[in-house]
Length: 322
Image: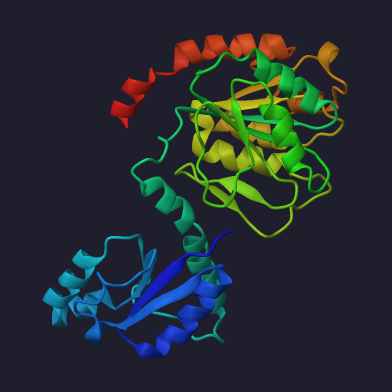
């Protein structure tokens, strides 16, 4: 993850070292640091990507309302407001406070990317493609059969060995209508593209369509963890898409397919006779009771075309709706 320059504004300079430490933990650099009492006119000049503002807003509204308004009006980049209180570092509350702030700081990259004038719109539909043994061949056949410009953002997670993300991305994008890319932290979901998930780093997508790529490894024996990918995507995008479970020798993605169903998403599987191993689609079918559709890769692509025609608004109308 490329580091951002984070500015700090406080009403107690003693809090600056603590905030510097949390910013560093989140993988960013501390830029300009300002004491509220001496911050007048300096915010607009600061070369920072975002601000962490740790002020007792209620007290300042009562004692210094005009300088506070001027300060907030001058901030034109993303702002994280801590509202004054930082727990003592030896207290039980400090770890939770630090974790919440680190999560917000890590999410800044996506927030900044989304705010850019040329950022892609939030996809109208998001589908997870999940696979294991035999998955790459089936998914490639499926993507080759999906017509260009359908308006869907695909997230492809397949059990692969360490460092094979680049090779899988190259294969999926070769001669296809859908660009394949390996998402970095803060990258945005894009319609008519395929994001190929890393086996090396835990990756999820947020409500704003930005990827959170962590330095930590996936839990469990399979990498990436398909249940985790499907579940985190379902929470934000289940109502506008679904999951297609392709060939594989385990039950990964089965449990999370229930979450996808509960979030309003579709659950489809590759048909038994077209799989190298039907264990994963079979486990998914048993987990949800009955899938919404099953078929070979070509049939799945044809069904998706029909589903899109009846569920997705044209791009211009979708943009106006947002």
